[in-house]
Image 1 (cartoon, helix red, strand yellow):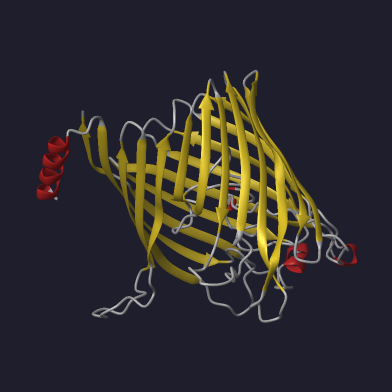
Image 2 (tube, rainbow, N blue to C red):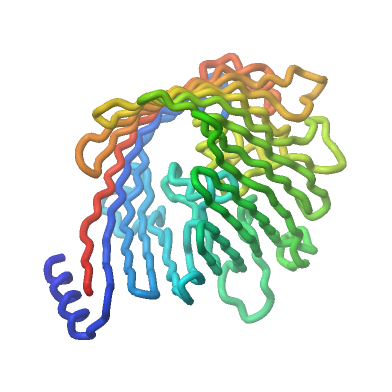
Length: 422
């Protein structure tokens, strides 16, 4: 490393380049988990799961007068997933998380292109999903404008599996795997208040044959809405309202909504919060139109309980959700914190045979404290008190078993070096 830095310094001085910064950051975070009903109800006779998963990430940054570059490499693996002394890694866990360049076109305009994180507001629709070890990225082109507290981003993406000589079939399956994306994001900040507007269009590949070989255009899903924050006395309010329309699939129309409102009140080192979120759903008996809202590319682990029963790889095209929640966040003088959060869940749409809409109550407890500089420890425990209604939307798995989850995570994220040349 020492010889690399000497070479880099000599090269830059020789070229006479003005005002540059190189930086290298590390992010290493092992997390152990005990799963006994995480993500789904715990079946009879099943055994709990336990494992350690780790992310190891290096972020290389470069900044000049009108150019910024970011390259992020990562390895995500479960401890023990590769046999020792194996010549190659069959799990292929090494990947490119980010690789983008931002060019300053003027004082107010810039363009950003490449593999990048897209994250806005409370991360309900677009988010980094930092809880998941692999994170979320988009291969996209952005045009950015910023001036006097106003920000506008216009983005677009076109996805392909690989270079082709003919055709443009995109056959990577998955609810999030769009073929095309276009969006516009507008944000205005003043004093302690702000408001954002978003319009997003996603195009998904259509096929004219059962084998998904012959492409037949795309079907489109649109999401539009707003997010806002404003103070009212000693209470800070935030909320959102989104509407989804277009196509839920090739043949089914979509009409769905999301509404949320939250109020936070701070007393010395304690933060108290109350809120509610409504996500529309489709009756379990079925409907000629899909009414199930899905938050798409957001950090869904952040919402609707940390046990991820809803919208984290599941609950798409389902009965929706009404989430009433409260939280208490305590902070101490040694920078440690304790979060207690409770959720009351019920379905938004009707369950079969007019069953009770109540789904369950979840309690989340998270403790965090710094161990030393650039090292933090987080501990968590969650418990789901599920109802029979939860069983109806979770493949009739019994709701009577204990459903809980515990985890411990160490986050190590030092800045390894930063070099400034002027």
